Length: 291
Image (cartoon, rainbow, N blue to C red):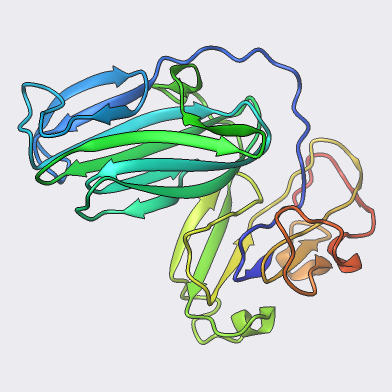
């Protein structure tokens, strides 16, 4: 799958079985007496990330200036929707959800709120990491979220887990090229750095990408293997901004790929019906076969 100035793309929606959501215990916090995550002083489980330390210290073992904190664990969504994460911090902050960096503001600042978006599925636990550093002056770190059906609120302890547990999902490689001028797939594939010199790479666990903090003029390629659980006829659809193409091989050989679906211009998030070319014809796939 290739995207230009891609914000969102998807080829499938997974049905989720009903399940009971177990209460969480919070995130694991590692507190360092330096702003570069050295000189570990304290580890503890924080039920929520809602700290306004001001000019005080998080703990007597840590000075009230020039320290850092790394919170790690998992967050569990209660809705299958696009989620917006908000971090209010004083000073620098970085947030990863499902191993995707969605907030990156690693500078000294007065209390400021930043946001990033990612699609989540109800009941699924996602790895989360929040890094924070304090320089001088006041200090604060707060973590909130919202979705179309959920008002903005602190992420409560019930949805935070200090350990992720076993993640048995597959992954797929995303490669991103910056400084790609134009608005078509041809502008990406014709770029001098394509395909061997991407600006960066990351692994995804779902065929959906939403990055609200990326600049314009970039392109992306997402590639890997699809292995159906069941034999049957499958229909694929894509959406994205600006242009998206979906290619799939008839077997495990990438040279046998054909274009199944594509957009003819920008679409909205998960807007599957704007162009007739966005949806493929039914395709027969076999369980356990790599495509």
